[in-house]
Structure formats: C-alpha cells, structure tokens
Image 1 (cartoon, rainbow, N blue to C red):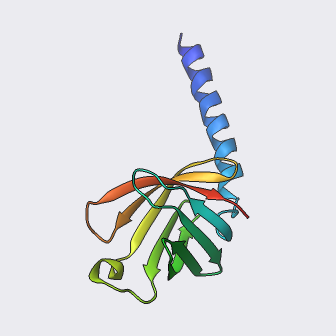
Image 2 (cartoon, helix red, strand yellow; image 1 turned 120 degrees about the vertical axis):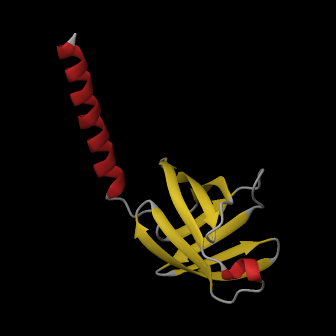
Length: 124
C-alpha cells in the first residue's frame, strides 16, 4: 500500500511540474487584443495590451491603464488618469486557470476585501 501511495505522489509531482513549466514560460497574455464577455460581473470590454499599457474599451468609454506584471500569473493595473476615487486604487489580478486562448482570473480592487472573478479571451 505504501508503494502505491508513493508512486501516485511521484506521478502527481511529475505531471504538475511538467504543466507548470509549460505554462510558466508562456507570455502570450502580456500583449495583444483581449475581450471580457458581458456577464454576471462585467460589461463587454475590449482590452489592448502593449508593453506596460492597457487600453480598455467598454460602453463607449476608453480608459488607459498602466500594467505591471509580477510574474505570468499576477499583475497590477492602475488608471493613468483616474476619474473618481475608486479608479485611484490599484487592481490586483491573479490568473487562476489558463486555457489555450483564455484565462480565468480574480481581481481585487485596492486593499479592500472586494474581489470578483471573470474570464479573459485573447482574440489577436
């Protein structure tokens, strides 16, 4: 029984490490054109990322944000020209699950306990 558990543990570690190496070396979500579909927590939004800038288009509004990547799974957004007090707070985004051309994320606004989740799709 111990051998079986040990073998399962080793296989799990090997498979997990292999997937992490493939995903961690991937920068495909750092630049390009993305879309957040309209849903429970979001309006339809188009995002254009280039270098350290993200342009957000939604409901006839265009906002420019700075984007700072900590690693391939965590980044921070800040409005360059905030229009209200809420936009002055940074947004901390954690990528939770990666798919072929999309990822699930959790966003926390400022240093509050408010979080919400969504999915971003890469379109270009």
